[in-house]
Amino acid sequence: MAPQYDAVIVGAGFGGMGAAIELKRLGLHDLLILEREDDLGGTWHVNRYPGLAVDIPSSTYSYSFEPNPHWSRLFAPGSELKRYAGHVAAKYGLRPLMRFGVTVTGARWRDDHWEVVAGEETFTARYLVTATGFLSMPKTPDIAGVESFQGKVIHTAAWEPADLTGQRVAVIGTGATAVQLIPEIARQASAVTVYQRTPIWVSPKPDYPIPSPVRKLFARLPFAQRAVRWVGSSVLELMMISGVVRYKQLRVVNRLAERWCRAHLHRQVRDPELRRELTPDYSFGCKRPTFSNDYFRTFTRPHVRLETSAIERIDATGVVTAQGRTEIDVLVLATGFNLWDTNFPAFEVIGRDGRDLGAWWRQNRFQAYEGITVPGFPNYLSLNSPYSYSGLSYFTTIECQMTHMRRLFTAMRSRGSAVFEITQQANDEFLERMRAKVTQNSVFSLGQCSTAHSYYFNQHGEATLLRPTSTVSAHRAARSFPLSHYDFSNVRLMTSSPRDIESAMGAANRSGSTSRVHTSRQRPSP
Image (cartoon, rainbow, N blue to C red; front, side, top):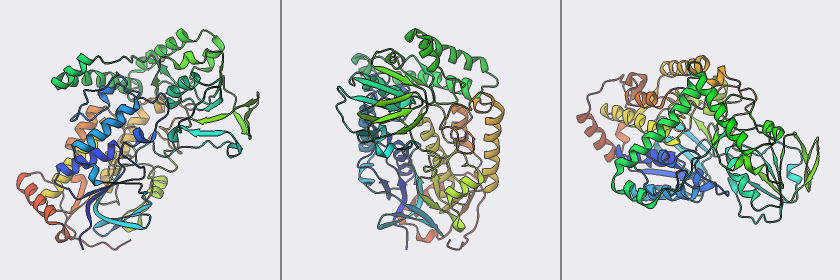
């Protein structure tokens, strides 16, 4: 029997929606998008903490083919990102394809299709796309006694509305989320103690309201907004490439970025001891930096205290360090997400010959060809993969992957094929290129990153999350990767739906590209 769906997409965030838009453009309309939450939006649906906002200019944080002229600020608040996600889903007809409250627990390749298991249900599809995001598995700190605390405990990824007026609040964590959240908490609570393991590089935030006439201009003249987007993207690219990826050649730019952040800290904090505690001892770029105009200043308020001693334990009513015990009413966990232990992949994925993706990644290094396909996993597209994150805007990554999908599926259809799989050789060559670039040029290898405690690094100490190339290079590779890097086969094409066959024939008439083509072959079921 033919699979139920052309493709199953796991995740209804911007990555999953981008994949669905591209597959629909390619003629695949029998799509199913499974989402464990109760609505779409991914990060921008789950995260609702006070102060939530995008930490790069809003003009760069959207699909280039679907610009949003209605951002209220240069750095849009989270609620506007959520509304934008809903707009995209409505315009491109994605919401009817979505099922919410469905948690996928496993997927297995069966000869020529995927079986996807979610609770009591099993779905079958020609293609499987995982778009579970990089920041989707909240991390709970491994601190003795945290379960024994009798007050209110809130993780930033599961924020519950709470009146903190007059409350004594402890915040664990000083990453990008905490930078946004701590000033908001300090405006309400009677006492705030921030427990810091690793300081963060923070630069001034040029965050201004976007006047109504400018928004109207963007709506009438989209090219004006595209120009602003290009400028913003160029600045982010300069920061990323010069300060991080090309650290060896442009070390001076990295030093200038550090000085810029230090000057910002010096302007806001006059106490030299507090300033020292808030200053990172690792190179700029080892850990994702962020923007804020009020984070540093918050620590100068009399009811806010920075604690840098390690937490020994948490008891029923307080937090204990070597410096003493602090009584608290509310414990806020701004401890981020667990990428490498539980999120690569987010559920069990079994490929050809019984290969377990999670186990294979951990035994053979985290890797994915062009950050999207994996050898041994036919008809599988992994969007949140090693070496996939390009630039600082997630939409750069999404659109690179959409372009890769377009080239791959067009080539496959032109051959009347139903199955694609990246070759082991092509994957290995890509992995070695990426590792060489990281080792020879990037701040991750040549800078001082040992104390950064950054999620960029996996449990083996390798920085395999970011693609160590420019975004221009990433887009070029997505448009022109050698088609010979893939094996194509026409396993059981006769089981395809009429729409599949019609689309494949149409693509074959339009395309003249060439690649390695394999005849039909049967593989044993794992």
